[in-house]
Length: 98
Image 1 (spheres, helix red, strand yellow):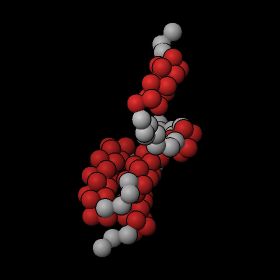
Image 2 (spheres, helix red, strand yellow):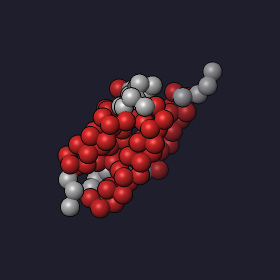
Image 3 (cartoon, helix red, strand yellow):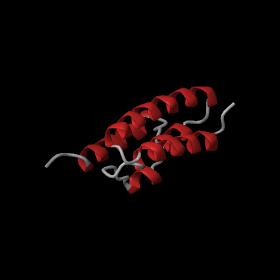
Image 4 (cartoon, one colour):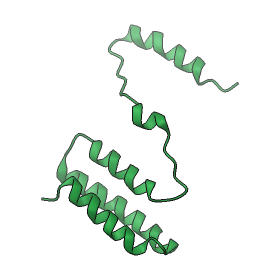
């Protein structure tokens, strides 16, 4: 069974081989995402592995920048209809296009 660190190391090793060839880098990225999804199925983790793997893959490309909200976000699950009635208008107002 492969561990997370082994998976990441193998991706880095493969990337080092193709890093100077733009066309091969695109194929590497697509294959890396496929391998990530297949490995995530076998590990059956809590989802952090897949999220971190995608961040790692995308961070190897110059045109990808991560936003700070990606690292500090928390899952929000309203527990009642009353909470939804309070939160939804606030969110709609906050994200309304002016």
